[in-house]
Length: 413
Image (cartoon, rainbow, N blue to C red; front, side, top):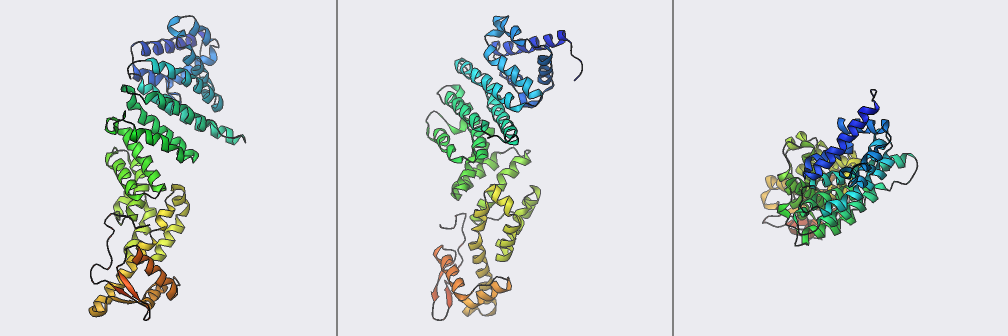
């Protein structure tokens, strides 16, 4: 840090106080937003932090004028936050920011119009980011990380302020998305339900009037929840909405959506193109897709084993594991096609021992009883149409559409 005189430090602090006061007076939400963006590391806020460390009596400056003192309960703790953040004391930075945020909320509630929504968004974002960093600091010191949970409680208060009939209600979805990020990080996704219920059933909200950015984020997180609950049609609808409305230039966001949408599409029988997987760096799904195309159970199991950690972290491992039934269906279909080429009159009679041999060729050992059990499940789940001739250990396939397509419907549970 270059040398900073007392006079220059005084000037910078006074300049910030004037900018804050003017932003409120002129209802300039964009300026107020920049004045509160701690983690943006903007040069003006970093130099303000340096000035506060040189000029130790900023509180006197706040109190000397009504113009500043009316916002003293916001600005004084915000200044302490900046000072702590500048020297890397993230726990103290969080505590001070939380105090400033709690003082900002009643002011925001009292302002009649929604001019300060962007500033409120920044507060909602910053409290989450600072809480995450404070928790990392706590964990590294062997203490219990609890600040992110506290940030979630604060954001629920913010949601309550926005869930009214006025123009501020359009901000509710942004805050909901910040809450989702907290709940997913903490592994408390069940807490999402009450907020979702408010958004989707409260008459004060019209989903289409929310900003597009927030709708995409909301559909991404609620789509992930539907994957978690194995409600694949709903997951398909929500994640497809997120993908369709996502900014095409935001490739990282598209990749995040596809990471969940691809397993959902696979579970309803829709396979992605190889170039899509390559473009968005999702090649871990390549062998899963190939296994489905070929009816290669060994390849599917190898792919799941190779990328097990990644799929488990994403929460899609169980979804992909359930694709085994589709792979069996594909294997039987390939055997059927080969039989039809050799002897069309007997194509619909498939000996179980032929399936056993095909699996053995894939280095998977199963006896007749195990294969019979799997085929019975395929018939039950309408992946195969037919019946057993038990005495002769033969599956008699339907002459009409023996391997029904999923047609974008999930395999019956």
